[in-house]
Length: 401
Ligand code: KG4
Ligand code: ZN
Image 1 (spheres, helix red, strand yellow):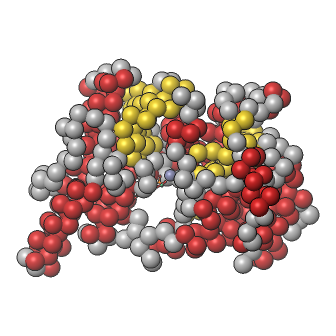
Image 2: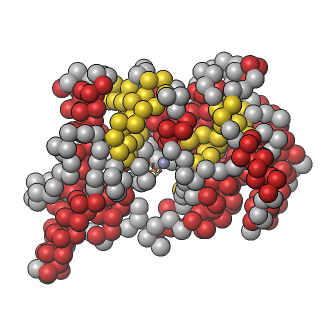
Image 3: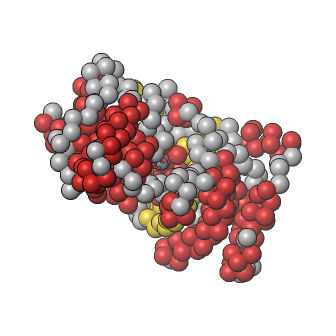
């Protein structure tokens, strides 16, 4: 499967050869010793002083789920080159991500993407000073592709490789926007797998304020989209359909709106949509067809109302004045408009990552790595070509609190 990539990239580069060897070895189980080493080698450590330089050209690699992302970020010029390959079309046929297909596709895409990034940035591997790679959370096999390539490149180039928490990538990504928020801020993380409110004091200092007790916001969008007969992933398709509907045509519940805490719950909302769509279907196919846009709009309004109210409550509770929104659902137009207006009314400001960096990407991983390195914050460091993945990795573990 990796032969075409090898033919294309056989240019005598020691680093690329190293990557390919690791990709070939990907299916073989690690020896006990190497597993122990990998555990040990990826502990949080402080890099030696000479790595904490203000200028770092850092390579970022993301392969935790169904997007292969590669980026090169220069902390001094803030120049960013990045490339992304989304596997959405491949997984759409199955109605969700198929982990084994995801890993195999990452293997196919990652080296060509690296090549494209270097071509765009007019840099070569020799110019890279550090590598940041998503170490978790995510799909184990998918994470192994990015981490093995990063570890191989790091060993071949004798440069540091650090493992980045995927959610840290998302929550720092609004700092790539112009204007960027100053610390401290509240971060709303709304992705396919997570819905969390965090207080961010500085890089590496994250405090969980609240999270979903069941479905994530993106998951609720995807499941509701499936009920409405839309494809996978459903969020963007549902938002498009909702734009043509009337949000007040149906009144759907706003779960936990008045719970008094900062937690969320979206599974009841999805069940309410299920009950409504079943009723509409019983009334005949044409009723369902003509009501779909209104149901989509009513669902979107309900979820956006809850997200907005909880964000305002988090700002009030902490006394902070800045809110950043990250993760795939952060691309939602209604959420952006409603949050921005509501926060402005309270004298607060909302920041979003550039729209193309809302979903998974390598740029946010390169950036999070750069922020940790340049701020001298402890990192999960790989060494001697050893690596490990952390498919389940609580964000609290990387916080200095
Ligand atoms: O952060 P992300 O790319 O991947 C994860 O780490 O999960 O988020 C993907 C999620 C999916 O559930 C997708 O349906 C949702 O973000 N999403 C949206 C929109 N664009 C992506 N949800 C609502 N409106 C959108 N415009
Ligand atoms: Zn994500």
